[in-house]
Length: 440
Image 1 (cartoon, helix red, strand yellow):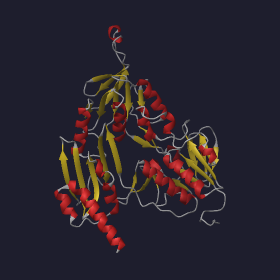
Image 2: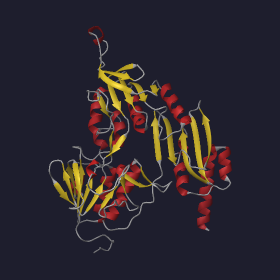
Image 3: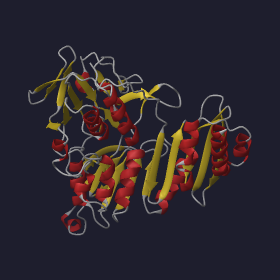
Image 4: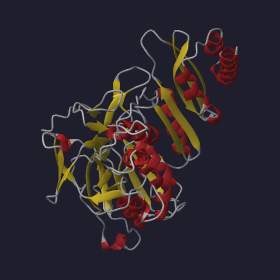
């Protein structure tokens, strides 16, 4: 049975695992669609639901801890009849339509949403358990990091991917002395090509950061200090590298990738690969189970294949779409453009869509190392399918819009091949032409 809005009128038990943006938006959306059914949000942290994206600003002292919370007020969720449970899910029983928590609690569901996101990956090397060796992932991590911050404190960030650079930016603004260690040949290998990566590395070094690539950490030890040196050097950690070098540090932060939280799905008959596999309705291989956010391997806009996209905007959209379908409405997700924007001590870099190009595609680039400016455009036929951009803040909105529109570039393709910097002209000319065509 459905009500006038098309929502199932039978009272349902909606259970959401994960209290990040996807889970919170889904809970709110279900409550908007359905006033009578129960909504239970299960969080494996003792905190109120908060945003990980706010943690860098917290480290810099720009916001207070209360400003990291996803919704204001301790009574927000109760006021919206959303039951927030604390606990870690250890099993999903799809035969009994129930989930089991680590404390022995069992919660039954009519509709289940998996929005468990991912967790940080810390390599198995000696010393990762020492005090001062951390991930920067949770609010509790942030509290501990703040205790180590200060001007001239020496901090080492291990991992030169997106998360590592976000952490680096936040810590650099506190006045700390920083080393960045990346085992690969270049920074941001999943987001930038060789040229743009070199520019970002050069920028970091110009800001006083020691960047080491093609080197890995062999072990972390307690700093070996003599009584004579102890008075002048309070550093606690000693990082041993595989090239024979070693570094003293007050704190070591790992940013060496993430792992999708799917272990509790073993034996559930819910299929997952790089993430939980879903269709265009965000439905899993079980009809009454859905997935959203970073844990979800859903439709990608550019290729049409399934992919994991760890972007908060995507997670929130997933939450809305999944909630609608959980309530009996029909909503489809058309896929997400790969989209990453990074601020590294004032240098804005971004990549969109198929930034590394497609087979039989074409590309055009402009680069100025002196100005820390770079623009690379990727084409397939006469459409823009991807872009990489450094230092050109004016392009941040128009590039994804032009990719998403799939507008034929026509004569503008050759102009952009000759000079990619004319992308602004192309966008406005093509957008105006499209608008006039629609009006006529």
